[in-house]
Image (cartoon, rainbow, N blue to C red):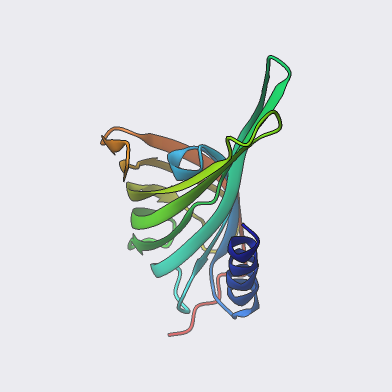
Length: 164
């Protein structure tokens, strides 16, 4: 788990240090992080095109004196297609490591599952409120769930200055 956290911190610092045009944070309900906070950025100077995301989410339950904590870490790449620099069709794919621990016994486990994403993204060029709605089929050892989806609400930073 320590190696995974170091990897995530390294990726996040690398993404934050690059001078990209579109960076945003959002809260996502549903999707590969179940209930997660995410950072999203473009890898090039444009508002659309290829980008990536990393997030953290999960939940904690208390039952019969036992605390169970489940952590989701969605990591993915995405591609935005749009003409008006506000409304985009989003395609994406990635992997989500899942780490679960119990305070009662040693029933700790970890696994991963894959996901793809097809959706709509509203992201203003000059920054501000963002919205996403998407279908995100997931697959893993448990099989394939084709009708999994979610929504996210967030904020895009930046002045919208785009290199041509």
